[in-house]
Amino acid sequence: MKQLAIIPGDGIGKEVIAAGMEVLDAVSEISSFQFEPEYVNIGSDRYLETGELLTDEDIKLLKSKDAIYFGAIGDPRVKPGVLEQGILLKMRAVFDQYINLRPVTSWFPLVPLKREVDFDIHFLRENTEDFYMGANGFFGPNNGGNKAHVHVKRELYDLDIDLEAKASNDDDFAFEIGLLSKKAVTRFADYACRYALARGDKKVTLVDKANVITTNYGMQRQIFQEKTKEYGLDLEFMFVDAMAMAMIVRPETFGTVAVPNLFGDILTDLGAQLQGGLGMGGSGNINPEGVSMFEPIHGSAPDIAGQGKANPIAAILAAQMLLENQGFPEEGRMLHDAVRKSLDTNMTTPDLGGKLKTAEVGKHIADYVRSQKN
Image (cartoon, rainbow, N blue to C red; front, side, top):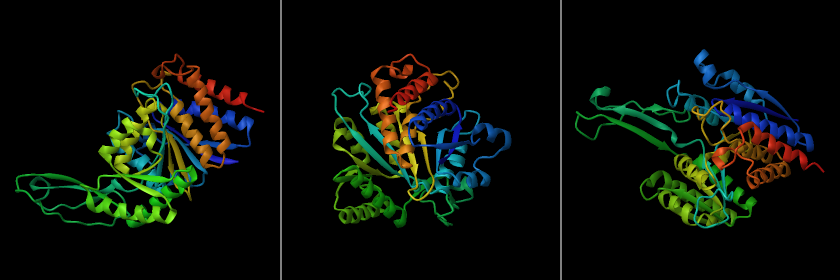
């Protein structure tokens, strides 16, 4: 019996998670996968009522679970960044979910390329460092002179830095420092190599901007060179701008792709468009030795919340990843096949050319899963 924490969150998160739960229920009816869900109220509604983001009690509860199934976060009533940093990024850091897995698959006929080409890129995005978890601050005459005290986002980096302005005293500056540790890059590289071997890939593609950000990504390149050699894999380097272009003209040439946090966020949204839009993108925030969290990559979309327009397939594909992570690969494949059937029969939401509402797509996919019972 798997113990799952269910966090619908904000906006359309509630709708797509409801559809995903119906599909997981269907899987449990016809297979050995059994689960006990516990719904957890974390999101904008609670924050606006109590001022609470991710509490110690939340963390204790979530640590007791096998996995987390998450909807979306974000609310126009709350300043941008408050919920994202106080809930989502904090959760990734607290549970040390250092891998963000985002598959990019050629779901025809949704691929917006001029030629029909099969691709199955699995992006491994380092999830706990880089510019998202670094340090930032301001300095200049309107910020206490030309010295700056760095605000550190994560307690791991116990920093207290004074910076001297390199310009005249009549100018102000803002800065953001991306930080990489040897320990984190090493475990990231090790996971990427093991993942590539498990997929049957012969190479790992490492994306960076080492021609400009030479120190951070130079160290990262060296560690990846050592690790891929250790595992007997080839290593391909790609600058992030070149990678963006290559994803359009030759996506079929990539398999396992390792990418730092910031660039990974951007490239995987491009990847989502290649497979039909944000409504087709599932993701996993993974700690191989701890609690992992699975979610659609889209936001809360408050403009369509409550209207039944949200595409639940990303959440259902996230449920597929949850099943695979919890040791049920055949059940995961069952969900993948059910999504394929939904697309082939145009039983989809309007964003994909169909006429169904969110809940109706969830029911259709759940019914297809039930029909596979032997």
